[in-house]
Length: 439
Ligand SMILES: Cc1ncc(COP(=O)(O)O)c(C=O)c1O
Image (tube, rainbow, N blue to C red; front, side):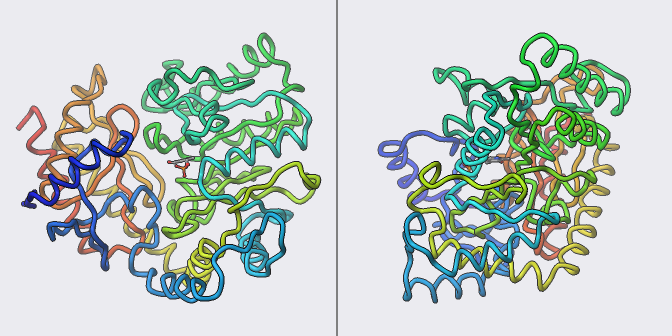
C-alpha cells in the first residue's frame, strides 16, 4: 500500500490554486522520477506504470539511457535551429531515417511539437493538396484539443463544450464491435453498416464526396475507448477514399510507434494512408509531432505553412536516438510485444470468466483495453466501478489510465520485464475482485 504524505497533499493543493484544471483528477500521483520499470512519486512510493506516461514512454526507461545521452550531447551544441527560416542537417537526417519506416513513396515530413499540431498540419496540407473544404472523422475519435484537431475529435462532449463545431467537419459512426451503433450481430455487418452510412447519408444527402479533402481516422481508437475496428471496415474505407479522390489521414499518435507490434498500427489492416501523423512515443519524452505525406501529393509553397519550434534539436536528438534503438532492436521489440500482449490478453480472458464486471477485452499487441459493465446483458457502463478500480490499483502501486466511458487501458512500456507485467496484472485482478458483484 502506498502512502500519501503532506508533501503530496501540499503540491496538489498548490497545483489547484495556480494551474488550470486538466484531467489530473484520477489519483494523487505526484511524479518524482522513473528508473527501470518503475515510476516514483515525491513520497518515495514505487509504481508499476501501465500507462507509459500517457503512451509516451513506449520504450520505457530501459531504452532511455541512450536517448538521454543524445539529448545531453545536443544541449551543449545548440537547442533551437530556427528550422522555420534556417537550414539544419540534424532534422533532415532524422526525417530521412523516419521516412524509411513508412510505405514506399512516403518522403515529405513536417515537424511540429505535439500530436494536435501534427493533426493541424495534416488538416492544412490536405486542404492545400486537394483544394477541397470538408473533412470527415469519426465518433469516439480523439485527434487533439487545438481548434482544428478538436473539430475532428468527437470523443466526449465536455472536450468541445462552449467551443462549437469544427469548421466543415462531418462525423460518421465508427464500428465499435462491442456496441455497434447499428446493432448488428457481427463485426463485418457493423463494418458494412458504417461504410453504407457514409455513402447513403453523408455523401448522398449532406456533402458531396468531391468536396471532402480528407478522412481522418485512428487505426485503433485510443482516448475514445480502445476500440479496434474490423479489418473489413478499414479496407473498405481506404477504397471509399480512393474512389472519391479523398485523402486518408491515419492518426498514429497513440497507436503507432511499435505499440501494436508494428511501427505503423495501420499496417495491421493491410492498407496504406496518404498522410500519417505521429507524436507521443516519437520523441520518447521530448515534445515532437510529425506529419508524413506521400511524396506524390506534392509540396507546400513558401509561406503557406511553418512554425517556430518544429524541428527543435532537443526533440530531434531524442527522436533520432529512439528511432535508432527501434531499428536496431526491431525483431526483439516485435517479439516482446507479441509475447507480452498475448500474456495480458490471456490473463484478461481468464479474468473475464471469473468476473462479470469485465464486459469486453480487446486490442492489438500491447494496446489493450478492458471495458467494464454493470451487467453483461444490458452492457450498462460501470463508470463508478472503473474509477474505484483505477484508484484501488493506484493505492497498490499500479498506474492505469481510463479511456472511453468505462474502459481501462493497459499500455505498459513494451520493454517492461514480464515479471513486472505479471505483478501489475495481479494488482489489477485484486482490484477487480473487490468491485465484482459476484464476489
Ligand atoms: C490519437 C491521438 N491523436 C491526437 C492526440 C493529441 O496529442 P497531443 O495531446 O500531443 O496534442 C492524442 C493524445 O492523446 C491522441 O491519442
